[in-house]
Image 1 (cartoon, one colour):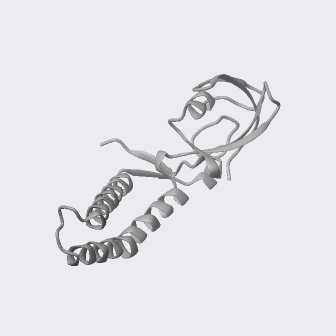
Image 2 (cartoon, rainbow, N blue to C red):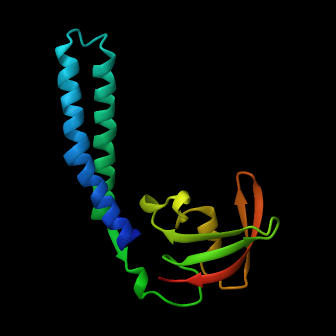
Length: 157
């Protein structure tokens, strides 16, 4: 059983999502199924089938999150330091083609969210950055072609 690295914040967020799914979403879906059953013939009842599908997706998400939490290797980012990029690091990069600055924190898979500038440790960018230091240039293969980034800062907080 492989350990799943994640930050303390990511662990807490996964716990909160499980609580939401179990205490709010699950009862709402059960009520929707019961209401749809009351409409009669289930073979042609779109509301019933939609609610059952939502129930399946919700249960799968709960199972996935619970599995991830049981295998979690929680890493306290506030206790990390150094100049090399590693799990938990917040890295500021400059795209060498566009001169655009981007900032990412390297986190576990279930907590990654590009909109919040959190990328998975398994992402191509993170894999290219691991072990590098400020001033290094990394080349990343992306679906849109190769990109070159210069590492401006490496922070842990």
